[in-house]
Structure formats: C-alpha cells, structure tokens
Length: 172
View 1 (cartoon, rainbow, N blue to C red):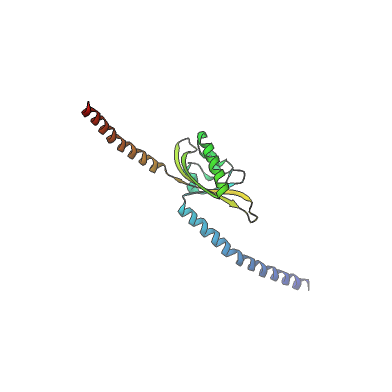
View 2: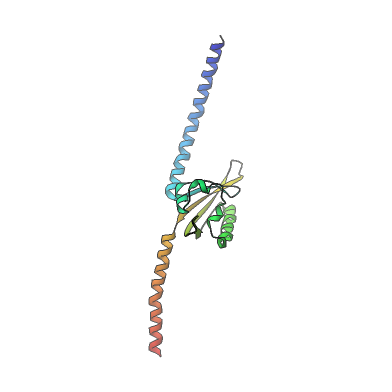
C-alpha cells in the first residue's frame, strides 16, 4: 500500500516537473537566441556586477583585451582603460545610469599593456523590481580603423602644408 502511495506521489512530481520544464524551455531558447544575436552584433560582451567587477566575459571580449575570461572575472571593469581615462569611464557610467545606455569611443589598455582603441556601449541591467543589478559592457576593437584614420589625416595634411609653403615662396 505504501508503495502505491509513493508511486502516485512520484508520478505527480514527474508530471509537475515536466510542466515546469516545458514552460522553462522557451525561456531558455529565447535567452540563448538573444545571447547569440548580441554576440553577432557586438564582438565583445561582458556582464558587470553592481559592484563594478566583471561577472562573465565572452571569448571575443577577452581576446580584445588579450586576457582569458577567467582572469578578468572579479576585476574592476574600468581598469581596461588607462588611468588618465578613468574619469571618462566614470562619466560614461553615470550617463548610463541616467539614460540606461551610453556609448563612447576611447583609448583602452590591454592586459599586456599595449594600447587599443575601443568603441564601448554600457547598458544598464535591472531586476524585476527595477533595481540596478549591474550592466552589460559591449566593446568593439576599433584600433585598426583609428590607425587608418590617423594615416589619412597625416596624408591629407602633408599636401596642404606643401601648398602653403609653395604659396608663401611665390609671394616672397
């Protein structure tokens, strides 16, 4: 008799568990698809806890700053910028708190000390009770584009300087 009672209880628990898992599966699929979509749009994605430390970091983010994701966990997020840029990172954080999202470009520093130019987007994350629980930090490495822009500026400035020198030599 006890076995029948336990078997009935087990059956009820299995039915309840299946229903919960069926409801959970679409949510898991949706979260997975959003994560994949974000990673295709933004190369580097990191979760920053409310205390300002890295919670989780995707492989692309870690490669951009030349570090392993495990080594970034627990470090303060703004330290990926040189000390003279910490005030800009703090101001970007304050703007993100006001508007929910803030983007900026600026120089960064890889963990090996080499410079990197980053396009950074900070997105506030809230829980169901509208409390700030951290933010997402999305980055793109714009170092190559920045170097090309600087070369183009130098190349376009050189002919302009030649024209000015030629113009001053003619008038003299």
